[in-house]
Length: 253
Image (cartoon, rainbow, N blue to C red; front, side):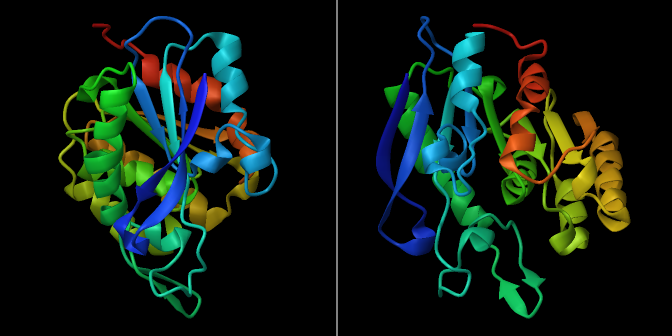
């Protein structure tokens, strides 16, 4: 079952309603829960920015996955808006894109996820509320935010999937974020990049981030996807891979 409703979200843009998508399995719960960025791109092609979603609904239903999946719609404002757009909302730190300064408001975003969205989901849906059974995932800037969530909110999220994470906007701060994190035991991450989206610089950054995560005792599953690109069609093909990571040796209650 897929519920779609609106919540007042993200203090970044004030009192604004955005869609929240919640998939609940047909079988009896409670279930682990996966929170996803860019929720409008996760389930339905008709809601997706470029007309192609991840196809998550079909995957979950066809495979009878015992998982609640929550997707929160992103900020659709222009980056020149005083409060910024999606880049600002999904940025853990400041960075520049050409001549524009993107103000990092990722902390506000994650505060909303953990202090407003998660308590609502915990109360309204058949989910396991503990850290071990609470996951997070996203792609591109959402992939960067997944790394941030596991690093700065590790007491809430134990596992994640960061697909094509945008590490190169500020490589120094991305590495510092990982280096300074206090990763609890059992932290697991699937991190990937598409072969066709990488250049020598971004491949080096990806490799350095993987090495650093491993040195911090994160249980990392990294993958360069053969023929992979920076789009939803490519990320859809990786769902079985990161689902294996999310469920590996997961203790049931």
